[in-house]
Image (cartoon, rainbow, N blue to C red; front, side, top):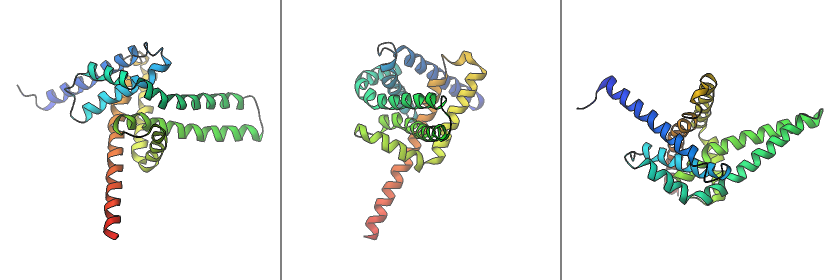
Length: 216
């Protein structure tokens, strides 16, 4: 029997929530073989791959098989991409802690510089892992491409930040959702936003190339 109207909508919402919860569960348990720290990057890449498959109409593929094959295949490479970002975040944390112990112009200088660096780091992180899943690039190029994309697609970037903030507020309101929802939900939504941003950016570059050829 074909579902229609509110029944179809309800089914799609429940299917979405089920996938989100399942992916977050897989994400959490896959931290264990990576000793937590080294499991974050491959687990997140695997989750983004599942989300990308669903967004591109490949949702019938096995989530479990896709997740753990991506986890295994990208374990080393994704950590090489992620760990420098983690190291930078730790340096910024130390900077902020140090700034709290001093005053004067040095305090403001460290705070301003660290805040700008933190903002750039967050923008890079927002796009780096989705880019890793969707585009084949040399590892060092993901940082630059992610940061440039965040500025070239400000509406998409704002949407991703808004999604993260909304999920954060939801978890503050209902802490019990923390182990089952926020990471999977952000990955599924941000994957769709990032995919659209990348697609539009590629289209713009392609059109610019055609225009250059016509002018030449």
